Image (cartoon, rainbow, N blue to C red; front, side):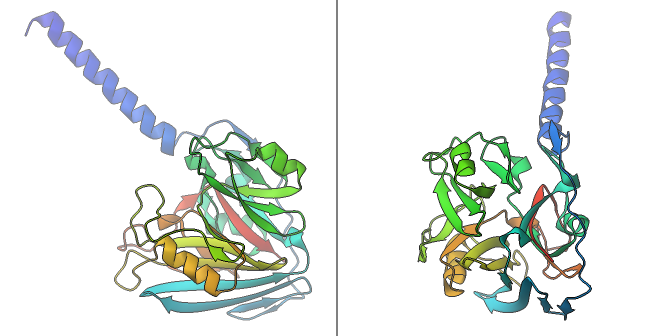
Length: 293
C-alpha cells in the first residue's frame, strides 16, 4: 500500500473511532443543556401512621401488596390522596437535561417522598413531550405518529393522548400538570388498548415493568414487576394491561421498564431491580413519579 494511502487509512480509522466514542458518550454520559428546579420541601411525616406495608396520614393512604402473576412478582401500591398536588414528579439532581441521572432512591429521598416509582426516562430521548409539576420542559413531539402520552391534570384526572393529535401547549392550557412520553397506553376508558403483539421497540416480550393507573380521581395504583430472573419471568405489555384493568383502572400507562423498574416505599426499594437477572441493582434514571406526605 502506498505510504499516502496508508496514512489516510490510519487517519480515517482514528476519526471513525473518535466519532463512535463521542456518539456513545453523547447518548449516555455527557450532560446536555439543563434547567435546574427548586427542590421540594421535606414533608413532615411525624403524624403519619406507618407500618411495613402501609402509610396513612391526613391526606395520603398507601397500601403495598405483592402478588405472583404469570410466574412474575408484581408489587402493587394502592394510593388514595385527598389533594391532587400530592402526586408529584421528581428530577435527577433537581435538573432537567440529557444524561442527568440518579437512582429512584436518591431522587425519592431528595424530594421527601413516601412512595416512588421510576418515570419515563425522558433524558434517553430527544423528543416527546415533557411536563413536570406544571413546567413544560419539552414540547417537541415524537416522530412516531402513534406515540401516546399520559397527561395528569390539576384535578388529579388522567388521560392518554396521541402527540400527533394535540400539542403540549394545548395540554398545558387545558390544565395539565404532568406529561409522560414513554408509553404506550395500557387502559383507556376501562378497556385494554394494547394487543398481545404490541411491544416497546425491540424489548423482549417478558420484562420488568413499571406502570401507573387511575381507578378514579384521587385513587391510583403504582405497579412494578420484577423480571429476567429465575424467580420472576416478567410481563408482556398485554399481561401488564390485564393486571391494570383487573385492579380497576379506568386509565393506565406504561412507564420505562427493564432495569429501570423500581418501587421505593418508606425509605427502601421493595422490588428487585435487575437488567440481566444476575445482579440486583438500581439503574440511574432521569426522573420519578412520587407521592409526597
